[in-house]
Each structure stands twice: as structure tokens, then as C-alpha cells.
Amino acid sequence: MDKRGIEKLLEIMAQLRAPRGGCPWDLEQSFETIAPYTIEEAYEVAEAIERGSLPELKEELGDLLFQVVYHARLAEEQAAFGFDDVVEAICAKLVRRHPHVFGDATIADARAQSVAWEALKAAEKTSGGGVLDDVPVGLPALTRSAKLGRRASRVGFDWPDLSGVRAKIAEELDELDAAIAGGDRQAVGAEMGDVFFALVNACRHLEIDPESSVRAANHRFQRRFESIERAVGESGRCWSDFRLEELEALWVAAKVAEG
Image (tube, rainbow, N blue to C red; front, side, top):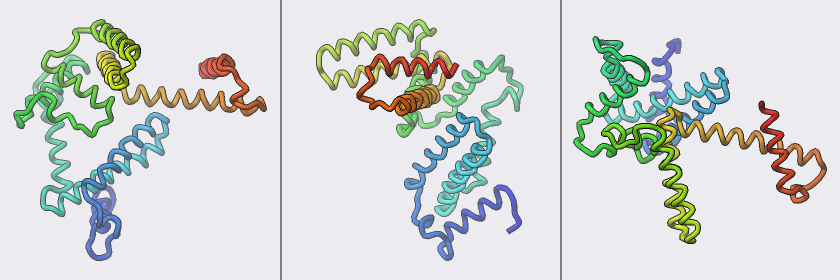
């Protein structure tokens, strides 16, 4: 096989799904069984970007592309659509949603383009459903919160600036404190969720991706905790021998060392 690029990948996919000579595992798969792998590969792309590894990113992008080809093959076998239809659809959508590039419209800046993009998406809706109806329930919770907030903002249900969001965070924290004081665990869980939702709204106003922000915090925590762990190991003492104040001092030292 001397073909290159997408044609080669499409042929490999077809062979994997061939009734005769195909891969037994691949032949058993469906949209539902492959979907978790698609999500996983998207996260691995994000992680490669966070690590700043371009060779790793190249590999992970290939894995993600294979997921697109896989779903397209499954659809083609059902005579629903094929890979070319997927490409044609995204090309048409990109042209349609960038009239300032492919048409005569004028966009002032990136923020204005984001507003215009959301407006075009809203205009394209043909289901007649509610504003939030097609926000996927399978999204990660923080990502879905951000998307719900953006959709509500589209119809004017939003604070005009960050100060309103900041006041809402304070309000939700007060309600969380009251729930904790009341000892109702169900209420505590509900109020904690409201705190998270308010924080995601703050991220949206600050143009910060909440998932990326939390992932970065996770990496920082792990890196600093591992520094503490090394210090404990080098001391020859057990974790239980350290007072919390000593461990906190090691944490501060790890933060300082990062600059």
C-alpha cells in the first residue's frame, strides 16, 4: 500500500472492519462502545499540549483523527454518511460561520467574533427546542457548566460584568456555610455545586477555560506534594512524625522553588 494521508488511514479502517480478514475486536465495536475512547483521546491531546510536547501531540492527534475515521466508518456501514460527508459538513460550517473571512462581513476583534459565532449557532438551530436543550449531558461537569452559562448569556441571562459574578460567589459561599452549620449533607452538596457553578461563571467572564484551569491546579498540587514526599523520605522520618506546620513549611518551600 503506497497511498499516503487520509486515504491510507481510511483503507486501514475499512480493513479492520472487514467481515473477512478484519480484526475481531474492531468488528464488535459500535458508536456507543467507541465513544469513551473518543473522549479519552481528546483529553490526551489536551495533556500533550499542556506538557508542551510536540512529538507527543503529533501522536495524540493521530489517535484522535482515528476516532473520527472510526465513527465515520460505522456510519458508512449503516449507509448514513461517510468520511467525505463529515469533511464537507465541517467545511461548509466553517465558511458559514466566518462571513468576515469568506464573505463581506466585518468583525472588530476576537471577542466580537465569539459573539458572532454564538449568534450564528443560535440562528442555525432548527429543532425549535429550548436554549439549553442541545448542550450535551456527557460533557465534563465544568465544561458543561461553562457552556450552559454561555447559552443563557446569549439571551441576556447574565451579569453585565465580573463584579456581579463575584458577588454571587460570595452569596453561594454564605449559603454553603449555612448548610454546613445546619448539618444537612444533601443541602451541603447542593450548595457546593452552586459554588462550583458560580466559579465557572467567573471563569467565563475572565475568558478562562475552567477545565484547563483545574487541570493545571491538579498538576501544581501533584508536583508540590511530590516535593514534600521527597523531603519526608530524605529526612528518615515517618509522615506521622511531622507536624502540620512542618509540612506546610515544605509546601511553601516547594512553591518558592517553582518561582
